[in-house]
Amino acid sequence: MTTFDPDTLAIPARSSHLVKYEGEGTVAVPKRRTSRSNTRSRRSQWKAKVPTLAKCSRGHTIRPHTVCTTCGRYNDRQVLDV
Ligand SMILES: [Zn+2]
Image (tube, rainbow, N blue to C red; front, side, top):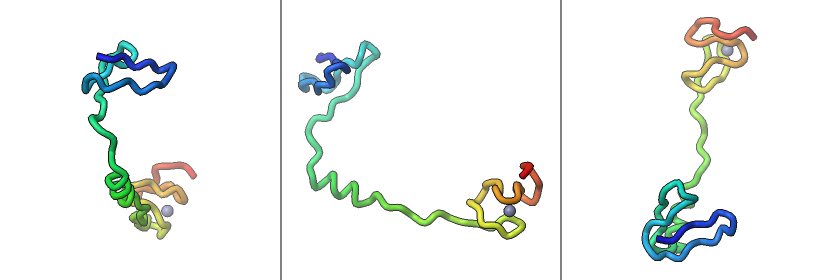
């Protein structure tokens, strides 16, 4: 089994599928490089999405199930001093 040296950051040769890491155990080493195609199709799913929005009891726009930061209310109760 190869030992990973964090000072040099050299990637150890894959002599086995496990590499010792700083005496704290072992980490898995990938068997082969991920193809450009696989990398790109995985990254094509990284998308920003529009957050779900709700209204607090006084009509402010909030994320659902969160305290309204404008009036400090949650579920019609005053829970924060604002
Ligand atoms: Zn509010």
